[in-house]
Amino acid sequence: MRSALFARGTLAVLACVLATGLGCGTMETSNDRVNPAVPLWYHRSLGAMGILFRRELAAASRTAGEPYERGRAEIDWAHGRVFVGTSDHGLYALRADGGSTLWRFETLATVQSEPLYDADLDVVYFGSNDGALYAVHARDGQLVWRYNTGAEVARRPARSGELLFVANAADNLFAIDRRTGNTLWHVHRAPALGMEVSGYAGPSLDGQTVFFAFSDGHVAAYDARDGSDRWPPVDLSAEAEQAKGAEALRYLDVDTTPVPDDLGALGRVIFVASYSGGVFALDEERGSVVWRNDEATGVAELTMWREREHANSAAGPSDADRLPPVPKRELLLASSGPTGLWALEPATGKTVWRIAIPEGGITAPVPILGALLVGTSHYGAFLLSPRNGRAIDSLDLGSGFSQTPAALGNKAYLLTNAGTFVGIEVDRP
Image (cartoon, rainbow, N blue to C red; front, side, top):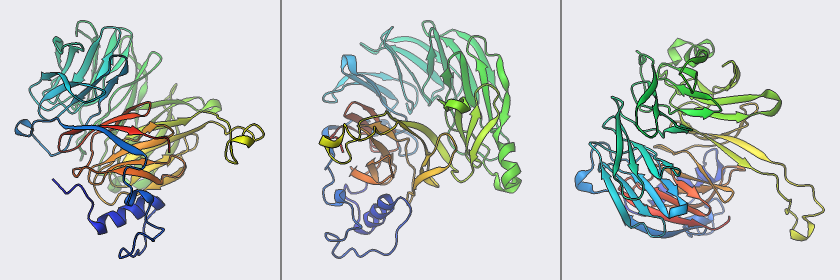
């Protein structure tokens, strides 16, 4: 495990990169207490984020595979529970206020998925690298059913009424009964013959349509009731090849779970990203390309950030009533290990800001109290401003965060790559 403190030179580089969102010139570090290029959190690392608790969770003797913890926790705030999977083959139910264990469910392989909590049935659905989707009782972890998909299940299932939709790493999408685990329909595409990166998309829902993406670069839309095509699969690799040429397309994958959104006059779209081809907005009704950003490559996660219209208090509370309200705002956030964190204008795909990461990966950002909480695999977790991507605060426990944070209200939960589970409280930046 790395030291819990950054090496001075490494932190100086990262601080400048995150502070500017673009890059870093030469910076003196011998007297960085008076260097304005070094942000406040360099010497006050818990200015906005405070640790509520931390505990060693994953049993090191049982972990397997690469030294990362992936997926994301699921919060059941009504009952004060958090559900999180680990590389020690288990799904844990923990108390949200202190992190103590309520129960643990053992699987046959690592659990690197994001669970889905079904409040109506008080059941948790989650996937395992053993190829199964599990349904367990949330109160005690007892098995309800186990559904074998035949390949690793890491993405969060999607639910519509009595139906669950689950994807696996072998380009399969299943619709199953949430109470019994019985198959209702199934679609499959042959995996791509070209080079692929590790990762794959999950299913998403908008009304009665299920959207899914495949490793061969195709994006599809299915009727949630019977699995019939809503439109012919769109080949994003072909779209990208026309612009970049075949030699540039080493990786065909579309690994991002599609994100639906309403662009007003432009209609409803889904956002997806081709690893080599960039980020796309597709028309929900026809699958046609609305826009494309071919600079944001290597994207593995897409997230929408929304800010509602609110009173303008820029000049002070006493002037808020006299100033026009701040209009609502949206950003499409694209997380990429090779090219960093991108904020794109949803209506056009134009870049609003970008943060480069010196090395390693970056998780999907999670909205919390008007800010964004994001994990990095080598540099800890950061609280960022969605307006310009600048760092507000940071937290590093020494091993980085590859698991996407889970947040509700002003609380957030993260699992480090070393298996330490952390509860965080955020003060309004």
